[in-house]
Image (cartoon, rainbow over all chains, first blue to last red; front, side):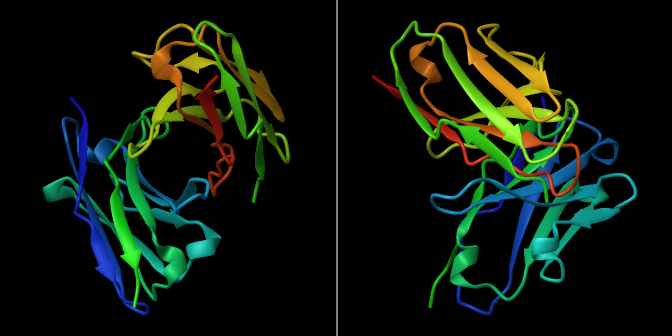
Length: 116
Length: 107
């Protein structure tokens, strides 16, 4: 059974960085992509980017280009999403999701709060 | 970016009602449209992919239709557990944008 388990809640100050992990199990990590999606309070879901689990290729939404980095550790079947230069507008729940079909499996979400 | 617009933003319905939610894309996305159900405090759950394909384990009362720019999610007979927010998403071109969501509430 496919599972995606994310890291715990984070509280960060403006200007800081956050790194969220997404540990997967129940399938061959290299065979599927992992996407990252966020949901700010009262806002629509927002796709941030994705990583190919096999070759590590990434693509990011232009909105986050230069501020977000998605990586993977195939030995740990884990993907990471790092977001830099945080502002209050980055306060959101961050989700990872797996393909097969697109965004068929989701992590439980990680709340990131940015506050001084 | 491709803009996705859902209507209505919210609706009130009763158990047993037939419910229809629409999603419009700002340009043609062929059949690259997914629908998700989300309950408070939970991650979205994939219902429909490629416009009209039911994800495994999803009840058959859910169906999707459409192509090009106009799409529809239909719940043929609303069950108590269907009260939730529904999101559409285009997967035609990155960034894979979402609609603003439609909240289905109990009348």
